[in-house]
Image 1: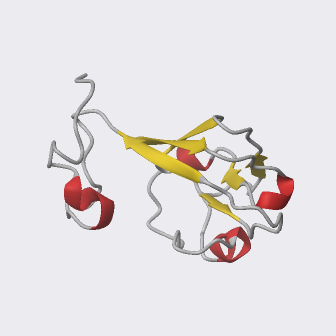
Image 2: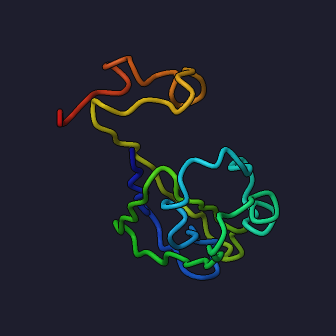
Length: 125
């Protein structure tokens, strides 16, 4: 599963751009951290990284219409928007027909995964 995050307004450094932890998708499912907040520093404190890993954040600056794509296991977040302008965007979550929740429990976003009217399969592997 992956997400395409589409900017509808300019997302400069002062807009609280999306920040990704480089390589974190390779750490596997850690079941750690809080993705509800916007503070990557707090998230970092709650994550026990695999040995030999490092926490390197990369911000994503986008013009309107720009797209950032990330793997579902990538640690990410955004900071406060200090620009005085709204930061507008939308996200599209995509998966193949083989995607399953790790714990097989349908809750949150995965509560809709089997409903083709809200989560259509657009490609079958």
